[in-house]
Amino acid sequence: MTGKSIAIIGGGPAGLMAADVLAGHGHHVSIYEAMPTLGRKFLLAGKSGLNITHSEDYGQFVQRFGSANDRLRAALDAFTPQDIRNWAAALGTETFVGSSGRVFPTVMKASPLLRAFLRSLEARGVQIRTRHRWTGFSDTGYRFATSEGDMVIHPDAVLLALGGASWPRLGSDAHWVPWLRDAGIAVADFRPANCGFDVAWSEVFCSRFAGAPVKSVTVTSAAGTTQGEFVISRHGVEGSLIYAHASALRDALEHQGKAALVLDLAPAKSHQKLATDLARQPSKASLSTRLRKAASIDGVKAALLRELLADIQTMDAHALAHSIKSLAIPVLRPRPIDEAISSAGGICWSEIGPDYMINRHPGLFAAGEMLDWEAPTGGYLLSACFATGRAAGMAMRHWLYT
Image (tube, rainbow, N blue to C red; front, side, top):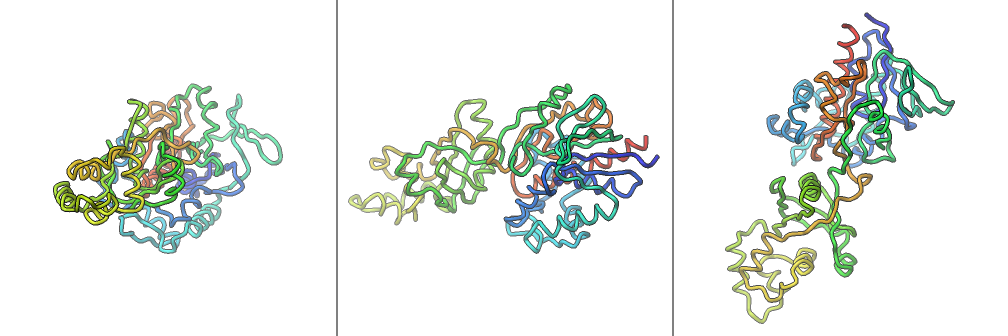
């Protein structure tokens, strides 16, 4: 059976990958995108080098998606990180593994890969319709607002790939949530993921250290212990090390009403060694001198200790060493979702079959960040968007032939 019409609503990585597996099989595939151009969030990610996937052991890789690990596994197995690298290479974009295990294009840009991808789709007959904003269901089809007025389409199969709720200015604005709920489809509320957090800094500390990096530390939360660096912001804390703990902190705030990052400001020294070195400092030496000479702590690290420890001046060597090794930063709330790199929440998995079709709406599929999953930064987000888009596209092709 050929000649079916397929609408892909959303021109991000998931929608484009679905179009890739649907193109060239005799169907009429159209991508509808609200923005003037496709892949805007993809291009934004490329400004810092386009971390396209991750090279870590695959058994560990597939455990990075939280409660959705099991639901995503088949899609990830069918389009692994190595498959992503092979796919990019076929489009003329070679990749390399960075020191952190993250995978980047050798050109360190997203635009060449996106251009080649779009050329490939168009060459195989995919129609790309920009400035077509989906505005919900009609009695017989799908409504769009366009520059030429409203329109309704009646495709044989539809993929929703509209993204989550982060970066709304790039198109992922979650305006679709009420329409799906009105259609009886359960959608979990969106929450920020991979985000910064507010902290009640004093004005003195904030005015002096906002923007300062805190380097060579470890952070511990319910997510585990991670080494790296983060940045003091005017509102609190942000940066890749914070993002690695964002979901754990957010969940603790929601369930327990409080949460804290625990810092080790001197991870290279044991508590005992630190206490011994501090005790050796002259009793008349200033706190700044003791911290600098015994622990190599000064600048923003020393300021953090003063900011968070009211009794630091009276601490003995063991208490001060303990505070340096486990300094708690209470966080108040996540930063707003429109500042987050990604979002948690979306269409509940109970609504989605293993083929990514919405159970109560035959012919309607969903993929990408519209679904209720989250992952840390490091290439995992793009990997799962590609993989679920591909899985949904393959399932649509199968459904149209049965």
